[in-house]
Image 1 (tube, rainbow, N blue to C red):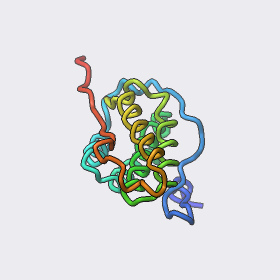
Image 2: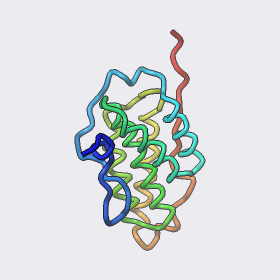
Image 3: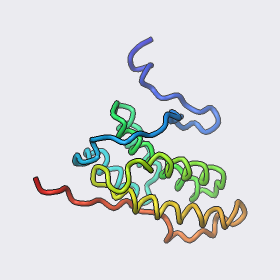
Length: 158
């Protein structure tokens, strides 16, 4: 088996999306580092509502990362997929992916690689609450102003 085949993510036959491993997220000492360019690009895409593009950018980033900080990237990716499902009216996809993203991001709060993780989790949690309250039939009426955004903190002076 080639190295590329080993590192390629498994694809869900049901959704066609990569399957993110279920390993529990762990804290990392790399949270104090500046965000990589791909994370900055993903944040711009996320904040512009380009959730599929965010997914693509972050998938490439986490697949090549061996440090536990990959769970930060996976958590944001999962939120993006959940929001993509929300905008498409898929209640189950929205709730399960938002829940999984919130769980993945927990160890990285309050701040990791410039991402205000605490704020992102709070905002995504409010959005998830609104989706649950709306239920499968009311998902289309969820207030779009509740869609979370990624806030980036400027790097600390050295």
